[in-house]
Amino acid sequence: MKAIEVDIAPSRLDAWLDLDGARSQWRVVIDHLNAINEAEKWRCDVWRRGFAHLSTFERHVPSPDDLNAWLEPTGWRVSIADGFVAVDDYQRCHAEKVFPICRYVRRARDIDHSPTPDYLHDVLGHLPMLFDPRYSQLLQAWGKLGESIRPSGADVEMAASLSHLLDVLDQDHIDPMDAEAGRQRLAEARRRSNLEPSRFSRHEKFYTWAIEFGIFGAERDLNLIGAAALSSAGELQRLISRQVQLGSFKHQALQTSVDYTTYQPQMFVSAGFDEYFEVLDSI
Image (cartoon, rainbow, N blue to C red; front, side, top):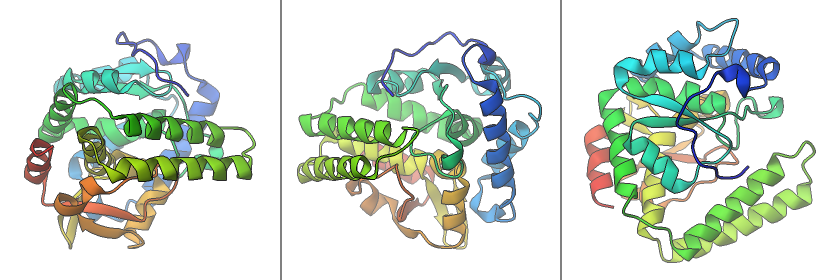
């Protein structure tokens, strides 16, 4: 997939989404997430209410018009993206309270863990959290800060390596040798980036561990707010069963790289939104 200019004017879903495949994947993901709903302590109340609303769409997948009508009280709206959105555009959208949603829908083989963002990740993971005012403020603050930050050469190479690997993993038939070569290329690019961490990489890691895999609270009362985990039944089940090591967001997150193509062995817990804003201000 490639970066494109964001289409700020939403269009009807049936003009750009494979409805038959989308309907099937939509219901399967919702059913899988509902199947582990007894683990309420891991779910943020705001997210659970939003997810419950989205679950009412039984006969059709919600269109951008449906989503914008639902999001109206938040001041946010969605835009349509064809694959990856360029970093500058993505940050600008967040700063302006526009959330890009991807027209791509994950394959059946990736139903419980998609290696790349897709429509289900964006809608089921991110959008419910926009009803939390502080989450909304955090996204805007992240987007505005990014306008003053540019990637280093190592950052550009790492992004290119990740894009290459995702292209390999998106093939109908994945060549194991190509996949392994792609993983090694990404690991080497990540190693070079970590030798001299840039401000850009810290800014990106903040988004990873606060917005995609964010967790806050005390050990016996944890709240999951991260969209990548909330939209992945596999990732969520690993969290519930304590297969994920939990570290300190404030002291470890911005020094830790992520591999979105596999399950996360560790995530990071913060004390709450005050800590997220404090760390963001330090970048």
